[in-house]
Length: 233
Image (cartoon, rainbow, N blue to C red; front, top):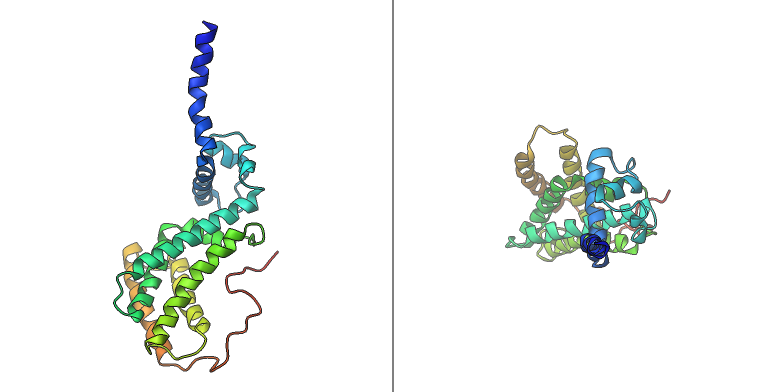
């Protein structure tokens, strides 16, 4: 009888152990963190509560993350990767460089509407870039996607020649501002109307930039800080 009960207990706990050793716990923690951030914000949640939500011991998160800031950096990196994928996927339908740039803006706003918790962690939580290099790498890939789209428009003659960074910042500021206003409930639009307005916004931005001289002429943007690097605490 004792042997049978022992086998029964082992049979019940082995799936959880396999799930952990196969690496799924890390993703479960990230998913649980995003859900918890949606409820309490990025600063109020604790790793202990996160572990409880994920159904693991309170020490389990520390096997993958040094602390809360390390986990937030991983959430941010995941967000930047999803942002890059959203922009890239949207751009596929563009026939010209100008169309692809406009669609990149649409992909940005689609991502922000779908994953508002990631946007908060990516741009509004304390800097964690130094803790997790993949955060910085993911952020650079996202910005490079926009930068390449700008450079392609310049190559086709749709924007003035010169350093593409100022144009990328203008486009970034426009769609990010719209996304933040929408996710905060400050616009008189639902999600579908917001995406429709994004098309108007990106068209206005593109036409405006194409009719203005390069803000720095032949000079490059001052490179004292990385554009994707947040200020340290």
